[in-house]
Amino acid sequence: MSWPEPITLQFELIDKLTTDEGAYYGPFISLLHTLFPGSKHYQVSPMFDPIADSIGFTVIYLNARRKVPLLFLEMNNDVAYDSDDARKAADNQLRGFFEVLGGCIPIPKLYSISALGTRICIYEYTVASRSLTPLPTTPPNTEVVADVAPKERWNLDIMEPQGEARLREIVGDIKAMVADLNWNCIFFHSLSEPS
Image 1 (cartoon, rainbow, N blue to C red):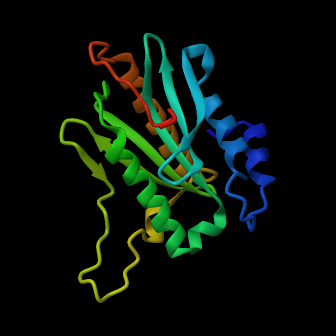
Image 2: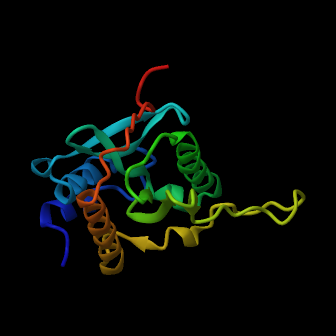
Image 3: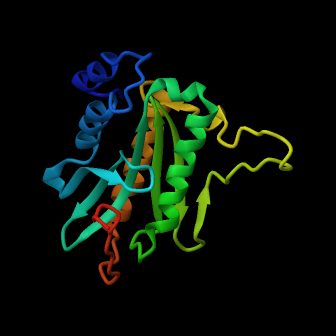
């Protein structure tokens, strides 16, 4: 199965050499609306990230009795893939987000995706164990400069069959968790609120 032609076209029209961090917002939001339609009580929203002082996450909530986070997506341009600093910043941004998330998460696993262009790194937070993968890469000692967010983490491209299949698998997993939601858990998400 492949993405609908209008979605593919939106991604193809992006200049791969652009340094505009927002270049992928439109195509990803269109893709997320396709995968999580509003008619099924999903909401796709850009969200201001106070940690990075940018709009870097797109958040999907289930809009029923309350807003529940289901997936976070942080987007950057293709150029960031070749920058150790940009990959490190993207990794730190997502890890920092999970650190401040707090609250009760009524689904067993919370996914987050870091996209550098169409290449993605998938983060999985398992609620029961409070564990986040991939594990952080730390240098063996402080005298060595290490690539703490290696390129290999962004090993899937959503415009290629394997990357599309993995993204669709995550969406299926999320929708299965939504079907089994524990509505007794109260969740209040405050990252988008002004401080």
